[in-house]
Length: 322
Length: 246
Image 1 (tube, rainbow over the protein chains, first blue to last red):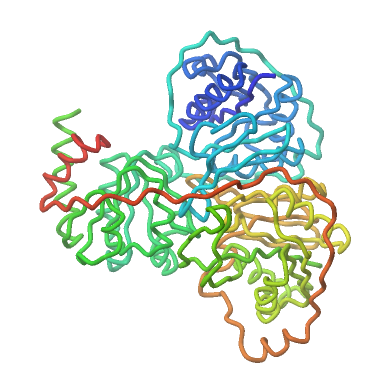
Image 2: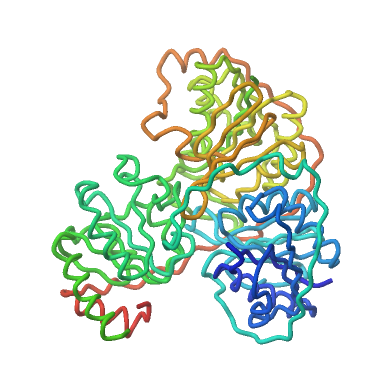
């Protein structure tokens, strides 16, 4: 009756979110008086999960699961849950997991609550706090089913060290061809670049930049900070930047530690999408821009002067703090 | 090809979010309801399949009579028929069960949902429908082409895109990219007049499981005042020493 957690990896290496969901699972297990078991796919260094309170890892080493496949992964995790007698399953908020989790929940007739931002408020009845209305509010949600799938928001609970003795086992799954009826044929992804989903810092720019040709300094600023780049909705609608960079209510949510908004006025839809970011910095020429009301730090000034100066200052700072 | 577009009736993106009845219910007072933006991109793509490939397009929703203006708007945009399952949507699991029944009885080849609704953000309805009915499924879908019973879809992944091959019957969780913002259609007078004559069936719900329940809501604590700084030196110092984020 352990708590099962799906710890995602990429090319065998655990994602940062894997350690956060492992930490969360350990907390839920503590509340339920049980232990946390992780299920991973073709992962190396499975014992590192012990640092975050996981006492058992079921590693599925299977060549047909090297590339993520939502249906096949859901079926495999359901088999792990059955084997382990686990009724509570913890997952992350990555794009892959948000694709997989509803399939898993429907397979197990489990209630599924995504976007959870804190440890359970109660385990009897089981109640969690999650975001709703695109980060404009929180809901306190009770889960009625025995089987439960809980999706933890990125960077909300945090990674918590909790050293535990861990046993790593191989777990084999049985999947027929129907699990692979949707096939990946090509993945187009920049390797090594921070993504909006998992970056600690996101640098975002809006129409204040005047045109796509001016994004060089945004890229450079992001590069110095190891940050992901993002943009406002008008910028993606105008085709200045790819849709994948659009953050806001109808784009991607951002839950980074630092969000730097340059030349973005701060429409309510944009603010909703970035409200989970911990520290927000706004650089804008207009002191009346609504974003200043939602920001922690602000500079009223022209992006074309402030950003190059900030780049120089950060280079100096990085050199001193290297 | 028979297409069903699943529509969620949601508050307009500019809505102020408030709660009533001791913070247990969303306050609809003064709120304008619209087709969920992710669903509208899907509906517009469905219109393309109708016009270029001769598909028929139905729209369905789960909700009380108050959602009918939103369904009429979908008909005015060009859907052929609308279906409303007459019950309050309880949670994503419940809605997926209701829609699965509609899809099973309607024999749809392609079901287009939005990747999530902008109100409760569950993002689970399309994947659950696909699982209940053993249909193929692609989420965060930004491009979809269909030839016969073969489908090529592109989905957004963290930091990039993935191309997938699959077959009908298929469910997608769609979003912007399926069509562009500039492709969205504002219903014209002719469409609005025609929509009044189109069929809007009201179905009674099937018995379904309530898996989750929102007990109450609250709003984030108001933000303290912004600290305005004059120089980048000051900003970097504050980010390092005070916010501790660099």
